[in-house]
Length: 260
Image (cartoon, rainbow, N blue to C red):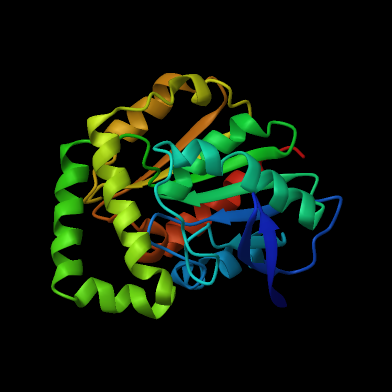
């Protein structure tokens, strides 16, 4: 499938996007929302593989402050997930003239995908949430502590610089501070999750170093729409990269069963 990289304006910021295939008005488009320190390239081949598996077009975009998108301006409001689930996606949908979408989000992007499902019910016909981070708990902060140590010794910073360039330091600072604040000031996403009407597929690795059961239990508690769950034994926070085969199989089957 052919690809085209281009910049668009979303919520007042220049956002880098990658379109996979040709968008067709009679079929939904897969929209990929990456995690807190990620970008388009860090998805690796997964978006292309899922588009080819399903025969659907895709849009992969870099959230504000990530990759080649505009640099963040601090301070930001605490609940960035709710903000990113609203206007930025509205503008992206409008720019690409998509009528129906299937959201595919990972980590913080998985949380954004879930919240966006309730914000854009007329657009979203299904959501795939991979290791969504809705709640910060002790194991989340333990994982954060390890990430900070890796950044300070230079290993993680060097890796991130390859993907984010001049955005790296401010992005990492914003990510760490937001996770810590969410651990201190709990944001209750229950009302937003209850607004979801589309089917949801949740994919989790049982060895997720940020934990996963607390996020899965919250989703199960709040969702009234159909929920499918795939728990992959010994997979980490990146099951779509650790074990792409079962993830692609489950996602392909889930999408094939959607009505649109």
